[in-house]
Length: 117
Length: 155
Image (cartoon, rainbow over all chains, first blue to last red; front, side, top):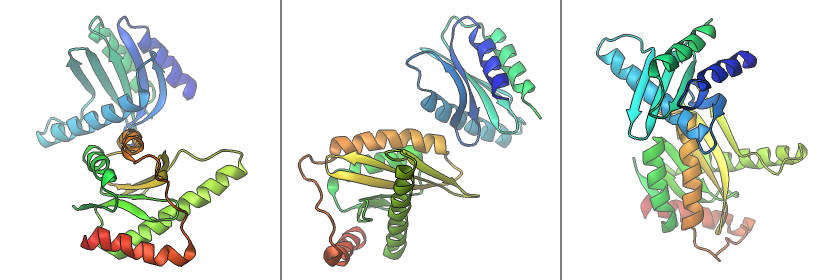
């Protein structure tokens, strides 16, 4: 299982503009596996990304939009991407402005589907 | 929810930690279980029990760590159905402190751990240097405990 998680991170990290990717425990906000560039705090990214996904999922539920599958947050200095891998994991990626979001999304959704029970 | 402190330097870091981590209950204490600051406790008896048990867990975990050849364990985390607890120690110029945090489903262990690191760093910066706590003697313990509780709940 851990090999599979590592290979998925490797594929995601090959997308141009990626600064790192990680598997995160969705409920706890703790890193499970990570492949990050130096200087990126995995602990902070995992905790804050899981919190963001939880809040967005709550909002989606409240407006009747159904289950959230993918979250994209663009900021001035980069982009945070998160794909839900039910029942309890998230694939989280950090990228700079050069990233091909479509390609990153495909790789992340593929990784999430691969670990689904 | 009320926040009360025995030592004023601990107040600002504690308020910030509670706001950022969304913790429900927090106790900052010495390894002997003397409370320096608290958030969320309404009754002295609950605070006494939590601090005594928290200090005892850390002492037991420290002894276990030594058995395994570790200097100490970084932090302990217990997950329950509705609540989780995070228990960790930090070295300050005032001596070692233990922080017990109780949190609910509105936050996560990841967030609590993340903001705990910042809290511990702030406690280290805020603690007055050159004023190491005296070791607690059994004879003084009850009087000391009563002083702390009076200050926290009737101050």
